[in-house]
Structure formats: C-alpha cells, structure tokens
Length: 42
Image (cartoon, rainbow, N blue to C red; front, side, top):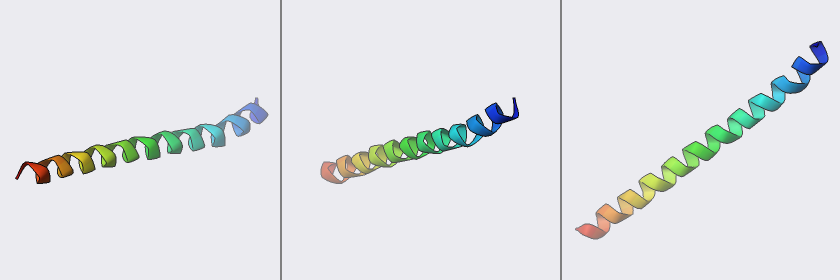
C-alpha cells in the first residue's frame, strides 16, 4: 500500500502540473489571438 502511494503521488503531481501548464498555454494563446484580432479591427 505504501509503495502504491509513493508510486502514484509524484506521477499525479507531474500530470497535474502538465495539465495546468497546457491550460495556461491555451489561455495565453487565446488571449494573444483576441488581442491581435482587436488590434486588426481598429
């Protein structure tokens, strides 16, 4: 049981961080495109 916790703990943390980074990247990309679109409108 202890082996299972130590094996899963860091992996879940890494996967969580990857998911967070991906979400932030997509958000920044969306904001960048929105800003670019707004600049082109004027």
